[in-house]
Length: 81
Image (cartoon, rainbow, N blue to C red; front, side, top):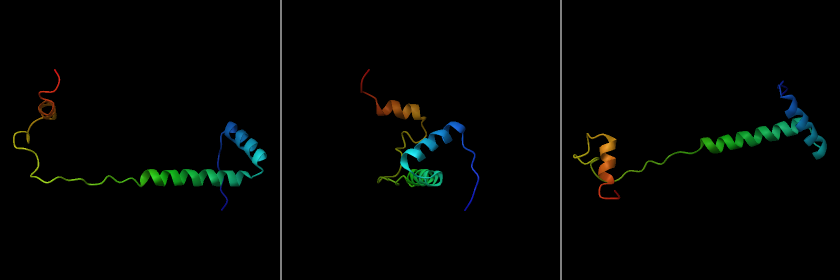
């Protein structure tokens, strides 16, 4: 399929140097770059956080309606100064 793409002059100049050095074409270089980017983006998007649960009935009633700062203070109570 044919398409038109605008590329920054400096980037095209660098690409032409690579093309001459490697004996390839602009089309091959662009296609390889697109493949690499698409593969990298697929890998990033495939992450899924596993659901991890623990037995129990939720928060202890003593902290169920308490602000996070208070919960944090209780967690670290007796540790440090």
